[in-house]
Image (tube, rainbow, N blue to C red; front, side):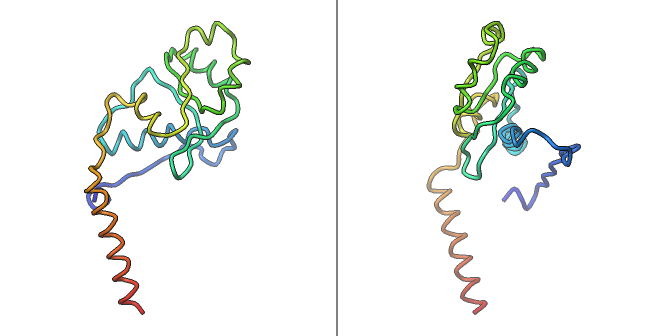
Length: 146
């Protein structure tokens, strides 16, 4: 129902500038959840990872450069895709010692670490009812149009 009363504008400056890949996916998803729930993202956490439509966190390139930048920026905790754990051998020991590097596979793991507190999920009966209503509306619409 938020879409009836709220607007969400996502602005990505220089979005057309070529990048190394979709590694900001979990960051953008976390920012959207933060805005919609009113729960702030922790300032001491950085994250990188592509995200699928189902919420799975996929590997990225350029992990070494991203961890070095986080370290230079004073970040304490960095979330990386689970599949990038093997790339940690390329990271200097002093950087690994100064950072808490956590591997994640799903967006719920990201949100559990990155948000200042956990959002309250919809109760199963509310979510099930909402899905059923949408299915009934869609069925009725199909029946009425044919």
